[in-house]
Length: 303
Image (cartoon, rainbow, N blue to C red; front, side, top):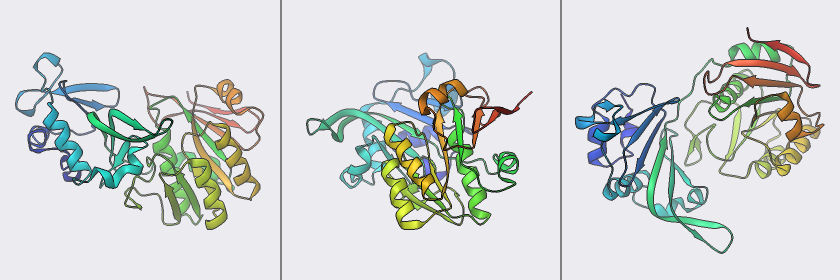
């Protein structure tokens, strides 16, 4: 059954339909004006049918109207969309429980940068969840002889953010101070500055801050043993993690990628990372496929 904090993101009509079914494992709900409401469970998708029961038949699916979308926006913003203007610049709002509502409509710009979104016609609620213990084997394998800088790599929806969150939780609870630059709010899922997911007792978070700037601020102000960020890749990100490493902190991050060749192409000859961990991808989210050392030599491969 969906939790109350998830159901509270919807107006009465959609709330009534959604609470009728046991949505165990649902990770995303998409509501678009005039189109079928779609629920996703990993790579699988289905619809809300008559009476709120799930269906694979799009012809019988409930179609959201403008009022459904407007009520959803009102609920997730507590009837004050303006109060979330900074988050709206990034296209999403984080709600209690750490769930994140992505929004689409008409972008309002100042000529170059997006200031806010109006005439919202689509909302995608990503349901926050964590798999405590999923990184236990990885931590035992890599960190048994001390901290190392690690890059966790996978294609989209491969489970790298979930893996990173659990690695940080375990290391933080194990005595290390962690500084987390959580640009998109997906790791700690902060609501009003407070993490909604367990990231460990000794973790300090800067959320909704450009990850490169956040890393540098954390290094200056919080003196972490570990500096962490999700989905690095830009030149600014790489420069920031290089500076973090020079400060003496270990760096644990994630990046999109398929294989070692692609990672080397993206990060060049950088010698920041001492281990590269590759996950299987969408078909087996969170499953470790390969581990390489800092020089790109294969250390372990799943059978």
